[in-house]
Length: 171
Image (tube, rainbow, N blue to C red):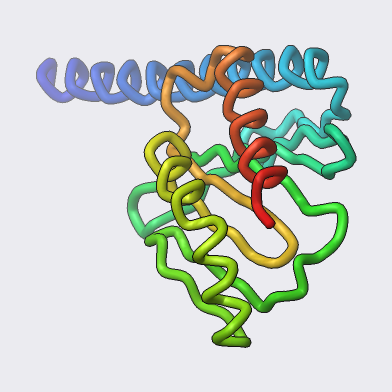
């Protein structure tokens, strides 16, 4: 009987500790996003609900930019990601798609070859630091798993600038 009570108390303490950790980390990322938004002069969309998508957005050098933090469920587990977006002011209109594996696809073979010729080295270099890099006619996107380093506003700001600089360099 006494063993059952102690195991029940242990389980309750474990669950409380997990909930406390989730709430604490949610507050930390909210604080980092707000500070990043201040630095970048972005607007914030950070709901009080810890399970909802958090977003900061604005414009840098004529490019619409966003940073999103969201959680995806994978059956019994889930992963929290941070995504950085830089939208081109005007579409490239080449039918270009570069998926997160680095595979380039395009609607027009000639335009695709020209794009690869001009930008392949830039994209390969960017893939060293920007994980899950995806490029299309309208956006450059990098998605990363939310690690502790992104609880620092300067890391969010630096990564947003890396994505923006890549978008600005593509032709």
